[in-house]
Image 1 (cartoon, rainbow, N blue to C red):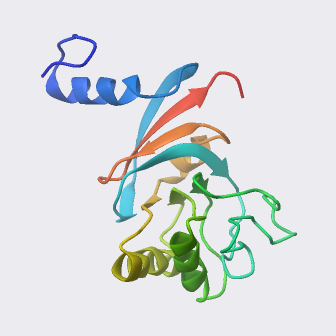
Image 2: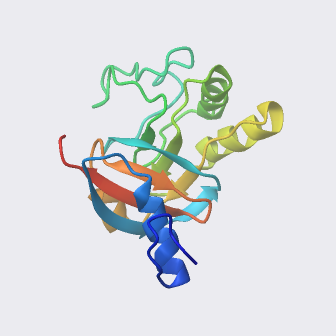
Length: 171
């Protein structure tokens, strides 16, 4: 296998190297985390990180993508297009409908990374795929890996649950 940089490497190494080639300039090549894909898919973007659970129902606006729970540490932040990293959802089963509506209106996060499986958020992503043919990946990471992700790290999520992390130099 040959990378676009004309380097020849063992197949797996070359695939990983070629994935890193597409990252933004000014990036520091980081690490590869192995997670469990709850809803498989591909996504990439800047990490929006919270250590607090959040209910999508009453916590995120499905019209704007803004975190509207004023008690949450990300209050006022926009999740649209970000990799939303939070331990788990909180509360209402209506969170799945809010996530679905966010996906339909185009203001959902690019993906969600959790510390534990949240069946309510998974349901929202899966049903959005059935109804709108749009979904977002959801991955669960082990605690050590989950805690290693920082705000604005650039993440690439693969369908097999791997998360490529590269840290931005100019944060």
